[in-house]
Length: 311
Image (cartoon, rainbow, N blue to C red):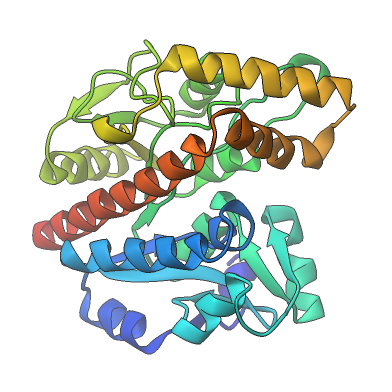
């Protein structure tokens, strides 16, 4: 049994009742609330994601670290703390490498995709929704910068609903890495891997599905034949919010150039690039981010309900 399974999970009452009844539950990350979106948009987006999951017939369970305990399901008061609107607490960004230290310090922490997946699995959840996964960074051959999200996807048998990988990353190399890890890449109503802000990357998915029932069936088949990885369900951003790939490419190149000019590296690079792209697109990237987060959550709710009906 892993350390996270031995820890005392803080499971919100509604989520606990749903788990006990075998009802559908969708896990959500908290990093996007604490570090990804500015207030009050972050809290508004968190509420919208939870609402659309309920509309699909499932119970939302936002994951985070509360006073050192892995929490599955956050109260309204706790969401406000994570959104930096109440309490004035320091919210640490928690990846797999920081779970133990935050537990030991009894601190508050916003969990990344990787850390959220691990906690969701410990709680017996089967579906997780996020915006975009991390992946292989540009220039990784020199920096060795590869997201721990890929490590988590390789050994956590959950359905992960996303809009592809973040546009600032090396998408072809990320797909190659996922293939090596044996993670199925499922296109939801698309034949192409979505590129976060854009609907297409011109790179093929492993299989296309057009309904939540089909997505649930692919996942069950994968696990039935011994697949121990996540199943990545990729959902393109809604048409009305898409930023054309050519426009995003220009913004990414300019943001990368600014980062190089200011010698921004390591953990500071991703937030710097995202901030610069928001400026370069006059806020469009922020609008798209919110839209795809809510859209993904809606699809995840439907898939969780489909899994429930198949049991």
